[in-house]
Amino acid sequence: VQLVESGGGLVQPGGSLRLSCVPSRSIFSDNYMGWYRQAPGKERELVAQLTIGGDTMYRDSVKGRFIISRDNAKNTGYLQMNSLKPEDTAVYFCNAHLSVDGILTNTWGQGTQVTVSS
Image 1 (cartoon, rainbow, N blue to C red):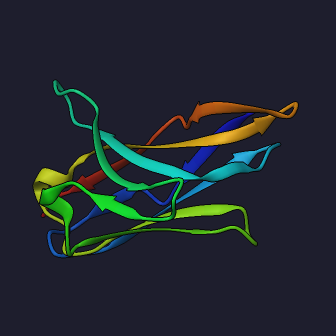
Image 2 (cartoon, helix red, strand yellow):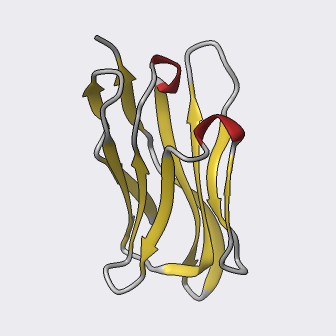
């Protein structure tokens, strides 16, 4: 059981990408979902979060540019990234709570590379 991210790639500054996050052989256990990123030589940082209560939270550097969402009917989470900047370059990871044999399990994806460069 894992999360599978997709949608990363190379984009020019000012461009957009939409990342997707799909549980493999499981479903989301609750409303929580987080997108994190890790640039080379840096620690993993939280980018955006859907709280269990249904609120959204963003780190200051992406506010107004990124949108986190989830379509429970499709069992898919998203991170819409607009007005991308070179400093957004990183591997992006999805984090969520999945139901594994009826047990809530904190699960990470393998990451998808986002490169913003001209």
